[in-house]
Amino acid sequence: MTTMRLVIGNKNYSSWSLRPWILLKHARIKFDEVRIPLFTSEGDSMMEELCPAKQVPVLYDGRLVLWDSLAICEYLADKYPDKRLWPEASNDRAHARAMSAEMHSGFHELRSSMPMNCRRVVENYKPDLATEIDIDRIIQLIEQAMQSSKGPWLFGHYTIADAMYAPVASRFKTYGIHAPYLTQSYFEKVLADASMKQWYEDATHETEIIKQAEISSTSLHT
Ligand SMILES: N[C@@H](CCC(=O)N[C@@H](CS)C(=O)NCC(=O)O)C(=O)O
Image (cartoon, helix red, strand yellow):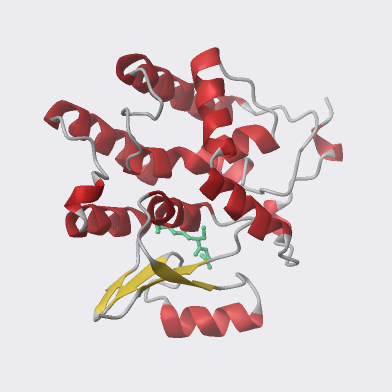
């Protein structure tokens, strides 16, 4: 049997790549990774060859090619039922799916104005109103899940929902967004996690700069 291959983008910037990557790491599922330096000529030809939707992440498993982060996570949950990648209780599973789907299809303002950038700390960042609405909704979802599960992860043990929300922990840190206690401690746990630390460590060794993901600090002073 061949090892699965996960095609990802730059670790510093690619939040969609982080989601299935961290899920695989947490579940201790063996895989090879192929990194595409996004928005470079080398990256463009790799994308052409490896990514049917011209986006990352993509999972290769034998003859199966899967080109979407949430579909990859769902596939892993199907393939490895013993890894308990969704919560067991039906209501919790439905809730975790809704939370993951909301992340997958929503939070456009947050995504465009607070791009993931693991290496950066942006001083004096002040979100605009639309971004604040996304921030508040994320906090509400995390507070609800943590209150109900009592942790340590959103639904007790680590699930796809945690993988889907991992990049927001990074964004809150980069842009200095304050959150209430439960959300703050949850994000600290996410960032202190060994797999996340490995992702960050790899991101610091990357040299590419994606200009559109580098918010200028100076323009943000109010
Ligand atoms: N809905 C897709 C979104 C993937 C996505 O937007 N990937 C970005 C990187 S984080 C990408 O490949 N951007 C490169 C491009 O659009 O050229 C998923 O969930 O996998």
